Image (tube, helix red, strand yellow):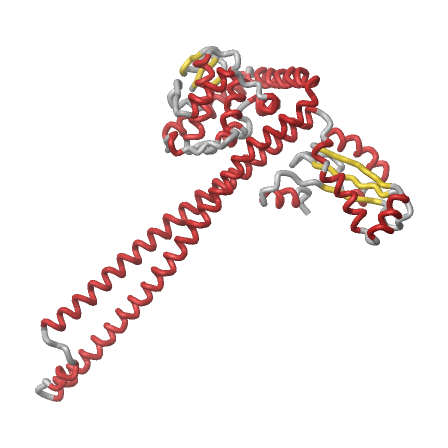
Length: 434
């Protein structure tokens, strides 16, 4: 069985996180009842982690502090025997004991006890939104193509119907003009037996053809009605998918506000977290100083930039921005170009919006920014910290507004970095855009 099966199913259904819980001691009702709950980062590899019943006590004891340290959130609670007895007398069923445990689970989100875990939780939620948007975007494109195909089939069927109808009108007009209004009259006008037999054979073929044409016409009319119903159903499904995508986009603002509220109590840890994030980004920069690594990375980026330039682009008027996009973009600009002149800040914002407009990248601001391996402040957690505390300056917000209005001072550039020898592009402040 896949270790992450339940998480994958829940994420596919749009849930943000999966909380695992269990209890012990409730069976005999003779001692304390313990309950535990935990939320793990999706895909987190904790060596040795397995069903507790398959693990020796010593192994379970060794894993406990590891889970505490690496879990997004965890909680352990208990009630004693007197509490159990009192609950039994009051409710007379075991469900109340589980309800007591559920009270602890309902408050689990408030148990995240460090700034680092708060930020990790925000990052996890934002990545879940991005994953959901990517899936919905694929389904939307698939449904849009299905609508195009159904419309084409419907147009073809309608054209066939028009041709069939015109053919039948022509045939009736021809019969009228030739005064062949009666098959019986045609038979009676025969001058001989052989002519009579020939007329009868011709009339039989004409009647058979007429019946076949009428049957084809009826079947085509049924096909048209089916295609019309299918087209309407597909359009309704598309509207539902678009609504789901918008709901995912709208989650961003709520997640940021929630994180902002939670992080306020960790004000004393914020400066230290910023230092750690910046140190992580410095490690990334040092890695990029490796010549072979840098050559490979630049080659990939330049190839992607050229593919984007040659691909299809939306107009800015076709983009529907979500409520949290402005804050998200402004804070990324702060992290990447907070010390740059205003023009450099607009340029960074333009790179993000250019990707949103290009068919080669995700078509949402959150999708572009949280795309894996693209922006170092995302990887380091510094963006999540900036978002939660809204570090973006007025200049950063103005730059975000300019970029989101369609202004670009770097053309169709989709990458930027600190200048290096041999890399040509548009130089603004301390960055080269390409």
